Length: 260
Ligand SMILES: Nc1ncnc2c1ncn2[C@@H]1O[C@H](COP(=O)(O)OP(=O)(O)OP(=O)(O)O)[C@@H](O)[C@H]1O
Ligand SMILES: [Mg+2]
Image 1: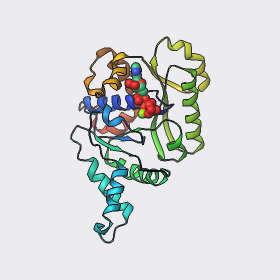
Image 2 (image 1 turned 90 degrees about the horizontal axis):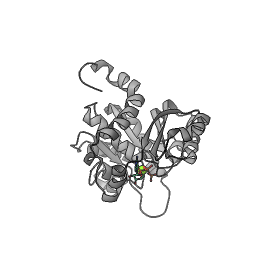
Image 3 (image 1 turned 90 degrees about the vertical axis):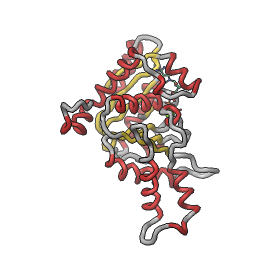
Image 4 (image 1 turned 60 degrees about the vertical axis):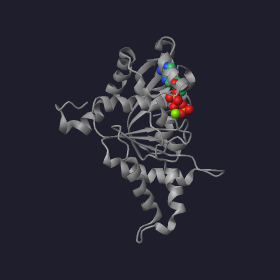
């Protein structure tokens, strides 16, 4: 998930996790790549492991570093251990926020290394990115099978999505299919059609503004408290479209066994 700030990336990431879990669609790792994270809350997870937390812990106990192993490798092992404790049907890893001033280079680099190694253990990895272009410009992900660019109901959201897409291409990221998802519609999608057409992005779907989704952030409750058939079908249509070929690639060998 990527897109302008506040468009609904985390909400959509959480809905996708919930959708795949409900369909028993395979093993899922959700990564909150936003230092200012809220994906754990949306998924109803307290104390989600964070890369920063793990790094700080390892650094405090460097004397316990097993011999013949580098610090970064040890951190990767600790991350692997930490994520698989989640018993909700999905694993969750957050990036965390380093304390004090300084930049996120070290954590970003670790995140890149971890993503490239850990993802092969899962059928599906869903990454909720921070708003803007940092992870794209740093090439935190070298390969993105499905890029869902989330926009709000505005030309600015669509233009941001297009800029992010262009940057991803420019950065040489190995990009699979890309979909624009317009979220929080309070009117007809037709009003944005010219902008969508100009962007050249394929419209994956549109999600209406929904009071229940908005109220989740007021109450701090998780997405699992939301069971509404109408909203669910809007969201499912997007995921079915966007994930179709992914599902075929990933689960093709299990076709007919009730997997998505
Ligand atoms: N379809 C929707 N209808 C109503 N409210 C929504 C909808 N989708 C998301 N929201 C609300 O919009 C706000 C922003 O959503 P969210 O946190 O998912 O966006 P984000 O893109 O992840 O933001 P950030 O850039 O800060 O990470 C939240 O209050 C959320 O509840
Ligand atoms: Mg977010």
